[in-house]
Length: 249
Image 1 (spheres, helix red, strand yellow):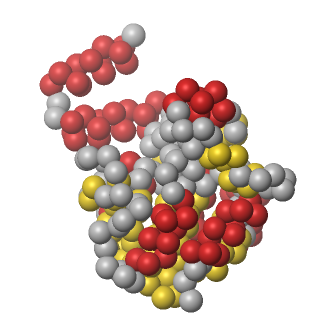
Image 2: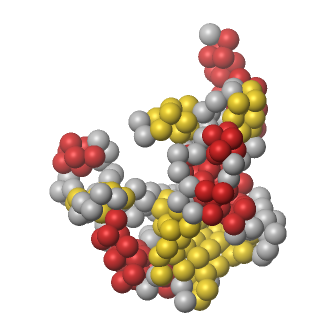
């Protein structure tokens, strides 16, 4: 009850940006502990929140998922983006990752989204408004399964990536040999098939790797984070360590 009253008061008297900071601090206090740590918002937590795919899926403070924490650790520890100048494109940015990356001094950061106000630039991934070879690094999460034409979107990502650059087009894939499942083009059909009206497909692994190769990428699984100690792996609430990383030769 106290939290409900406080939240109502905050919405009434504080500007949106200040309200966000206060709510963030409140959640850091509410969920504080020593059992878990979110490397994205750097919160010490008593635990993560569950979701259908993992018991430790969601950070209760910044709302990032286990896959986002994995990507941040890869960027920080493997690519060392905080130590070297990097031009980065982030498509359909997750709010807290966007804040963290845009505040990283070594990163020349640009985010893009089809929705107005959701990113720095409003754009369509099928026709990106950037020059050829503009970015060292591109991160796209859970987008290829919702776009109209994933092959065209991948070609655009390849075009704007620098030679020698890295793209992380993260998306759920079936690893059991199943082919890609395409949903009929209607909200009702997509809801029935995927329980989400925006999801158009569930990729089969072989077909997704083929699409990446046809776009020009060399795609490999990077598993360097498997070297994390088991205690650290559990503390970050990770559900895996392999990340599909694409390069442009």
